[in-house]
Length: 115
Image (tube, rainbow, N blue to C red):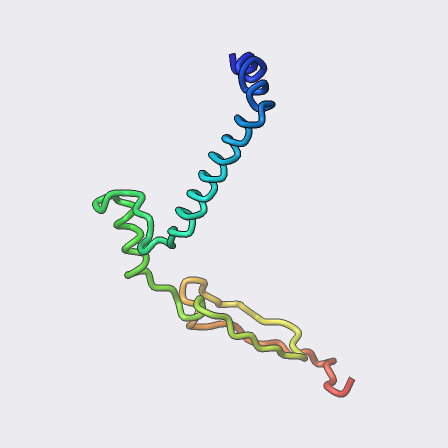
């Protein structure tokens, strides 16, 4: 159906200069209208609302934003570099209370700062 319409109507009409000129004018007007409406677009003023206010995901999101506390070592990493360390003895380290005991440093006896 579409092929017959293109072959029997559209292509013969586009070969006629007045019809082609009218189509160019119509498409140009459509392009100008599109450019005008595109220039009126602004970024959203508030976040997209995907669920109603009483939905469980909205409540969970609000809870995580306002009440979820992360440990202070999870915020930003402060890096320090040390030379002459052979390892870290983590015997007795408690993963559920990492601030209590971090381990004992084992220094490398063969390390020489001058080399």
